[in-house]
Amino acid sequence: MRTTGVPTLSTIPGLDSAPTTHRTLLAWVHEVADLTAPQRVVWCDGSDDEWRRLTTDLVNVGTLVRLRQQPNSFAAASDPSDVARVEDCTYLCSKDEPDAGPTNNWMDPVDMKIIMTELYRGSMRGRTMYVVPFCMGPLTAAHPKLGVEITDSAYVAVSMRLMTRMGAMALEKFGDDAEFVKALHSVGAPLKPGQADVPWPCSDVKYISHFPEERAIWSYGSGYGGNSLLGKKSYSLRIGSVVARDEGWLAEHMLILKLTSPAGAVHYAAAAFPSACGKTNLAMLQPTLPGWKAETLGDDIAWLRFGPDGRLYAVNPEFGFFGVAPGTGYRTNPVAMRMIEQGNAIFTNVAVTDTGDVWWEGLTEQAPQHLTDWQGRDWHPDFAEPAAHPSSRFCTPIQQCPTLAPEWDDPAGVPISAILFGGRRATTMPLVVESRDWQHGVFLGATLSSETTGATDGEVGVVRRDPMAMRLFIGYHVGDYFAHWLALGAGADPAKLPRIFGVNWFRRGADGRFLWPGFRDNSRVLAWITGRIDGTADAVDTPLGAVPAAGDLDLTGLDADPGDVAEALAVHPGEWPAELDLIRDWFTTIGDKLPRELHDEFDALVRRLG
Ligand code: GTP
Ligand code: SPV
Ligand code: MN
Image 1 (cartoon, helix red, strand yellow):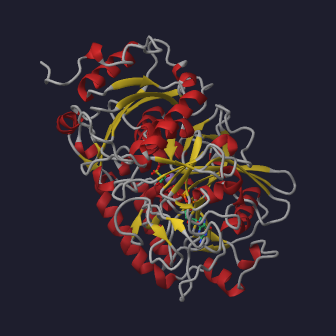
Image 2 (cartoon, rainbow, N blue to C red; image 1 turned 45 degrees about the vertical axis):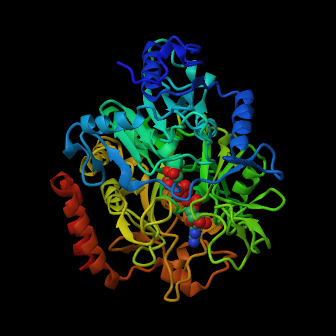
């Protein structure tokens, strides 16, 4: 039974030129082509030629603008309605609703598939269907984590080349029967014969759906970031966290950083901050403290597994950076600037200068006199709105990062000695606090809170709980996720576990200014953290945990008011009754699945606060 006008299998050019004999993959590609009815099928090989072809096509249709000031680089402007991850349209379709828990939108997988199958029917008409094989994490891993994204967006295909190990190098690992995650994506904008395309096709109807039992992802209607680059949040975190639970490891929203002290001691740290709360900046830190060296391994996602020696090792599954542009400049993040200026970058929703370069708020102190803003409008410095969208992004290959640690592609990963949990809190949370042990550290992560940012749709600046910065990315029940964290710690040698810290770069004074200068000066906090691990740094015991006195931080050469620093570090018991209420509400939301150990930690905190 076929609808008239839908091309049948054999008539779709490219479908049968598959560079693989993997039977499940071939069958799935045929099935999707049959359903979505594309004009042609392209198997992506990830070559330079392919990149040139696709970027040229994208320039011709108006999706990309070629930058004249940076080699092989492009600016894209999304549809103004498609600028962030869509939280309300993101679903976790576990077979049983309780497995999704209170942090996920749930729908029955059968019902979701009925809805989305009808949306996908003919959704690629008039478009090219790209088959994008990819690998998350090193290709040399014993069991490489493979995926295939089928997409009708060339922008997604070229972005996947920057963000993942994509094309022939990944397909080589498939053989005839390797397991892989099926990730289906359509912008949901079929073209009628003769209908002209728009620069950023997308649909008002959006679904970003995850089927954890099947390890499958179905995304429809959006072309943007984490909604469409499905190796990132959808695979590496939502599906990844479920695989990690089943296999005894952790998939986390964390940067990975290597620190070398002036004495040559090496420590690796992983840090979980919610979206737009400083991961990329910390990952590319240039310490202001003399003699310290920081190197980058990852800026967004970490997969953590115990090694044969009992320590916890981290791997970055990604192959590129999809970083927030505004605020990135030579003063705040010179490493990112040097990375970007090498070219081979795709920018999304930034402003473009009259000379064909990019610009965003914070790139330079003074804005150019004239720009084309992210919505294509003439922009002058007195324009009321920012020239770049607050969540505009740069996307660049990881190998261009000038501070990339040499061990970045090691399938064994790097041994983590510190885990940081941080949020964006104007009050209450001190600059840094050390947990008492793993269980208390899990409590810090489980109660992590942050003011919402522009990285997702919805209101900005509202305080909400964001457990381990994973609120939007846990692929199962949050209570079970906490239990998994606790069980991993309980099964490990406590002396080999990473120490867990809470940080807050964003505390503000009464007049609204940041109390801590942040950015490169965060190296002073990292130095204290490694000092705690090595037993050389002092702290004051507070109800929250160990906090440095101002004199315990190395503040040599710091350009900040000493009163501000003391206030950034302060623990004010008066701020805590309100906070405890919020934690209590959060725990009530989680319900019966909240592990007893976290209730115990809460009670102990209440007691310590008196
Ligand atoms: P995602 O890519 O969305 O996950 O964001 P991220 O966590 O990588 O955040 P990023 O490093 O891109 O920073 C987001 C915003 O926070 C930018 O506007 C930065 O300028 C700002 N920021 C980062 N670090 C600091 C800091 O130490 N202090 C202050 N005040 N702002 C910071
Ligand atoms: C984030 O929002 O945490 C990002 C960008 O890293 S996105 O790819 O859209 O998830
Ligand atoms: Mn992120």
